[in-house]
Length: 105
Image (tube, rainbow, N blue to C red):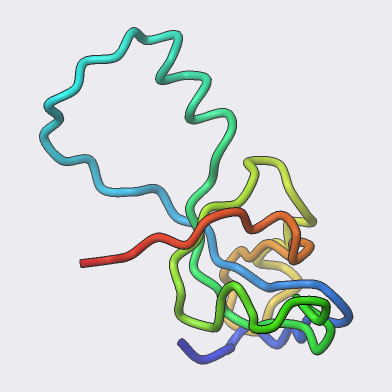
């Protein structure tokens, strides 16, 4: 994934583009209260760019551009379409706000 946003993350920041997963048929039935809590806690995103100091204390980065990840729902700063070169909305999050990689098949 190339960075067409015009935004370059600095320090430990990671630039991500959030998305909603496509809904597929489900086998597990969960109460609405549980579903609502899960939606409130997580946000799916694609890593667009990584700051030069992200994960500097680890042996290797947890994610790279193009990776699908989970971030906390309200993490970071939302960079709206009015401040990006391509008119899309992105989020700048701290490297520690990325807590899971998603394998896309």
